[in-house]
Amino acid sequence: MGHAPEPSRPWWQRGVVYQIYPRSFQDADGDGIGDLRGIVGRLDHLAWLGVDAIWLSPIFPSPMRDFGYDVTDATDVDPLFGDLSDFDALVEEAHRRDLRLVLDVVPNHTSDEHPWFERSRSSKDDPKRDWYIWRDAKPDGSPPTNWRGVDALDTPGSVWRFDARTGQFYLASFSGFQPDLNWANAEVREAMNDVLRFWLDRGVDGFRLDMADFLGKDPHFRDEPPETAAADDYLAASRFQLCAPVTRAHLAELGRTVHARPDRALIGEVLYQLSPTQLASYYRGADPASSEPAQRSVDGEELQDEGLDMPFHFGLMFVPMRAGPLRARIDAYEAALGDRWPNYNLANHDMPRLRRHGEATRLAVMLLLTLRGTPFLYYGDEIGMANVDVPPEQQLDPFIIYLTGTTRDGVRTPMQWTPGPNAGFTDGEPWLPVAADAHEVNVEAQRSDPRSMLSLHRRLLDLRRARPSLNSGGYEPLDGTPEGVFAYRRQDGDDASLVVLNFTDTAQDVALPRPQRWSVALSTVLDDAVRPRNGAVTLRPHEGVVLLDGAADAGER
Image: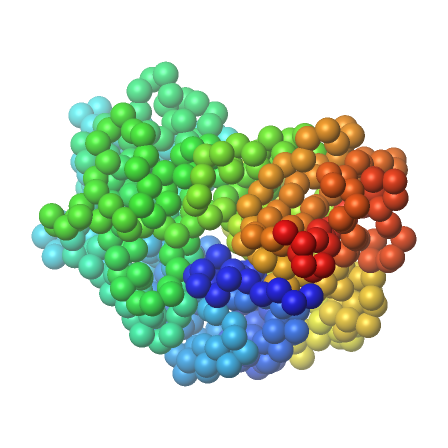
């Protein structure tokens, strides 16, 4: 096609990130649990697919009560996954294939079995006491504040856990076995920056920070006011528990550490309830409007240009896969960001898989891979893996997702590589059951099928890489489309693309701007049946197309 993305932009603005859940990607040692050597053995699939980076969910030593998000040592590898030499080999082999590696780090809390916390709870006088957040009860014996715990959203509970050994409460935003670190303590901040330096020294290209907006707590530990304390919306009830100005200062300090190395990325998970404007305030260099003064320095050093390269945008996960709601959310997000770089994901290790969208699943894939911004793919979605109904006696995840009322096990089942035993994931007994449809839905079968979900992903990724408009161009929604059709234009210089998505169950005729110039590059149906005629394109039910402007290829200006 004769085009290439602008090389001067950072890798995380040019690329597509693929999330790997290490327990479930590939088992190399036969114990039924995926590991780092297994990932190395499957890197060729990712290079062939056309993604640009892999993001690993936590691989650190852990009791695995929250499957790695309860960390006991953030500078080592859990033996389940291998060791540091295996990690180094993964980095080397990924880089050899031009794949970046993003590591999932948990800065807000540790396991209660972490040596830091064991020392902290041992005595009020221990030097590590202030590494966590300890407070006395109120005079009536109730918890120190009325702040709510994340694991008790449906029936509001407390973030505070009483520890009889020293007679105080400690703060744990997520569960009692995940105590929050005290980011007001400079020693804690330096220790966590040292964690990032440790992995940067081993060649990591960036970090995804788990629950990044929880770091800053109200310095005065005030109760939430009565009018918001009982709100159904966790974010609305957490002004003091989640003190955004303080959090942004801590993220700026982490950003200084990461960006001291060339071309490294800092990505942050933030609450999905954030509005587009609130989301924009977490970007590096943002100057958010706030009723409280934003902290823009640490230890007297100005860090106003530091922070997250991208806060995660979860908005599309909770929007119906329909034209109107999608456009409304994307337009609002784009308006709030301005020139800042967006990102999108439609599934992950906590949320239902992409296939939940049924007939609209292929439209969701085309949307994700053609919008302005960085797409994040979840392992297995490239072949259309389904949410698995794991029988109660085989469920392992203790944390109930309050949005779905189910465990997360069903979105974490083994990757389906082949139609053979255990879908090619392991020679042993898989830690979670393999999906019943694995004999049909697997990489091997879909690689040879030119109309498969895998082929759709690969062709979209090829097109995205080849056309500057799809890789780095702007976003302009197209007005005047039929109800139920969402269309938008992408343009970078003289290269332009048009994406048209029909979310209805009937055929739709869509008029094209400058109709003589467009040709269909790709349909979600993966055939050649769609052709522009008489200044319009006719889409079949639940079909999407990418059209290319032929003017640039013809030398027009």
